[in-house]
Image 1 (cartoon, rainbow, N blue to C red):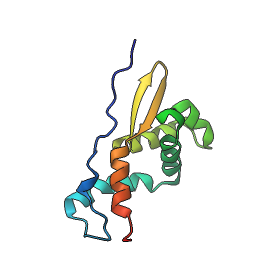
Image 2 (cartoon, rainbow, N blue to C red):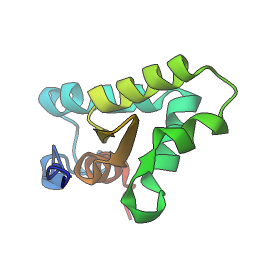
Image 3 (tube, rainbow, N blue to C red):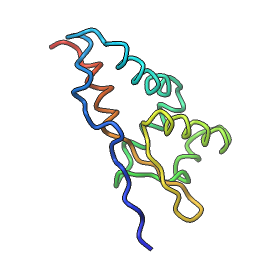
Length: 118
C-alpha cells in the first residue's frame, strides 16, 4: 500500500510578510504568524522542531524523537500536537508510528519576517 501524498506547504507564500526591518507587520500577518512563534517559544518544542527540520530524508519517526528527552511520551505528544496545530510540522501515521516533517513554507515566512536589514 502506498502512502498518500502529503502537503508540504500549508503556507507557501513567503512574500506575504516582508522583513519587519523594512515594513511594520500588519495585524493580519501578526495574528497569522504569532501562533507559530508561540509554539516555538517552548525549549522542548524548539528542540523537537530542530530535530524534525534537520532529519535525514526530510522526516522523522516519533520513535526517534521521544528518547532524546527526559519527559514522558504523552508530553512529547502534546508538544508535537502544538507544533502541528501551529502549522510548523505535518504528520502521518504509518502502522503504529507517526512520522513528522517540517512545513518549509511557514518556516520561510518566519525567517523572512525576522531577516534584519542588510
